Image (cartoon, rainbow over all chains, first blue to last red; front, side):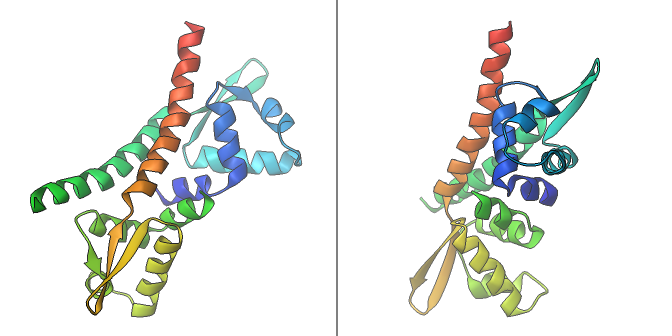
Length: 94
Length: 94
């Protein structure tokens, strides 16, 4: 959970996730969108992969990156739980 | 957004949010739950407040902390958008 939120606490990484939300991309296609060195892009992709936010699949000679919907859904479930318990509390007070 | 995720990237702060999801608490009530110094608890509460995740209200001589549901809902909307666009993409491919 901590690594998940650390991965999200960076604007470049959130921009990569936004790009991937429209479909899978190769590392090269992602790098093209950013005015930064390949090692920097590669570092950000590694952080996202280690946090479980993106998945990598080799197709032919290319590595394709895509969003891991399961992890994003787990994150939503966590937030929903925080909010839901609060709603219950309000209802009990009524 | 960055400060929001940075605030969430800490297990003590997530535990504080979990406690507050059951209802508002004073700083003292929160501090009682943790085996750490008051300055540490106070620091974590400050980070959560600055990120907008918790709100503080003075009632009598006590400061009451509560979850900011609006910010949590905005975070859910962000995650939903990431997932939703991905679903659209899948449908287009079908």
